[in-house]
Length: 234
Image 1 (cartoon, rainbow, N blue to C red):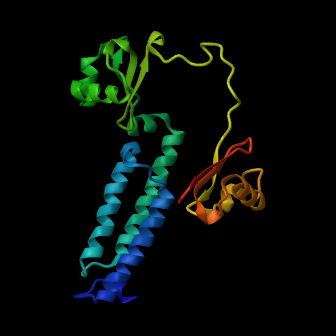
Image 2 (tube, rainbow, N blue to C red; image 1 turned 60 degrees about the horizontal axis):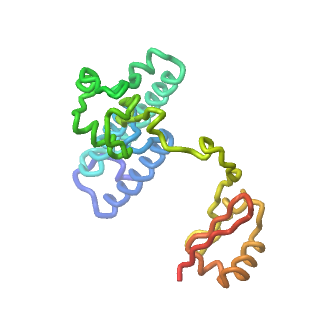
Image 3 (cartoon, rainbow, N blue to C red; image 1 turned 45 degrees about the vertical axis):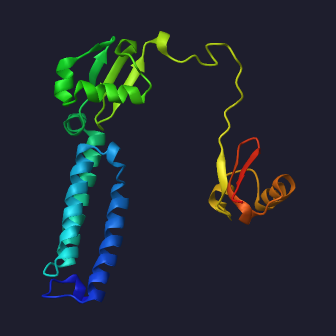
């Protein structure tokens, strides 16, 4: 365990052990924190990600620093992060401090310039985000908000919204959720157990309908009506 402590020099094996231990400890820390993707990070999440990255990076690149101090520091930070997350759930003022309310950028087809400045978003950025939503005209937008996670959500006026089956009074089939039961030639038993079929039924159906074995399947999914969809790897 000498690699845990700061030394004048480390052997290649000790450097490797530091990397392995640091990787698994960081994995556990992130698992406990439940960090989301970068686009969904709140202010508290972003600050924690930067802090933890810097803390673990130094002992992994400097033999004079020990791992134990970094581990203790990260553990304390995770405890503080957990307290902060709890406060965002229980305290409305703290939640507003950490994550601001949505800021309207477009309302009733008009751009709110002062809010663009407040959000530090240019008109070009706004138009780019609207184009991603297939919106080509600001006048069609009833409301566009800048969300706390940095994304822009937009809502069209009713007359510009897509027509649905309900609008046309067309009867739809009941919703049927599809479950992937085979991936890359292997049965996902955890997902299979959630369905009404078993392994034997699956094999028989693959053989009878697709003339294939489990090993030949790239992806196989089944819906709630026991309708099997198969993509073969050959």
